[in-house]
Length: 255
Image (cartoon, rainbow, N blue to C red; front, side):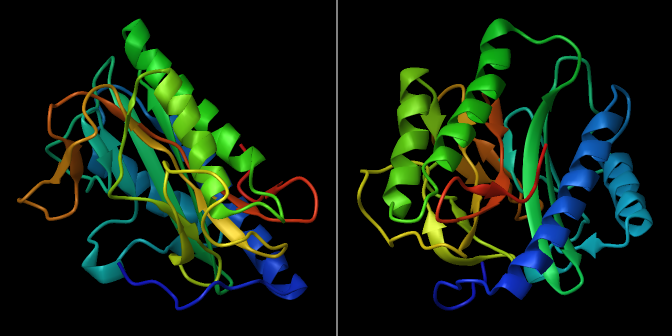
């Protein structure tokens, strides 16, 4: 995927733009996740998301990005990320649905994701989703000036390993704000005290992608985008955009 060159430390004015874009992305995600129902197709949910973005004065940053054909990424069950919405995919009771919303608002980008359970699901699936959120929170807590990217990665890994979940290695978190994908890359595994130092003004997307079985993944050949688990077991994805400060991180996509 295209990424901007070098780590971008935002100016106060740029941080203000990132806040507006992050809030817009969070609002769209909240509304779209609240609309998930059994019987609707992922294409219907994508169309609803597009209308919601228009109502809130923003637009999809996904559509057309490197040729991506939809407004959002909606990944169901064994789909981890980058699920292309389709008329042929119907959401059913017990499904886990990852909704990834990235918007452009006033020249800035907001990016966040959440996995929702449709109705009831087995305890291990519910634990998968809850642990992914816990791993996200652990990573965010380490996003402080003076720490390093590896401190975020290691915090996510510790939570995932304690629950014996698979950690996707091939896709990572990233910088964000002026572009959808900026440096640095933020893996969800690895040793602490390594990687680029965190500075106040950096804007990061932290996004654990965890699986109920093997961490091995593949991309569906028929659309070239949807990433699925090789063993067919469910996956969960959670993402928030934060700003590094001299104190506690500032969440730009509040839940």
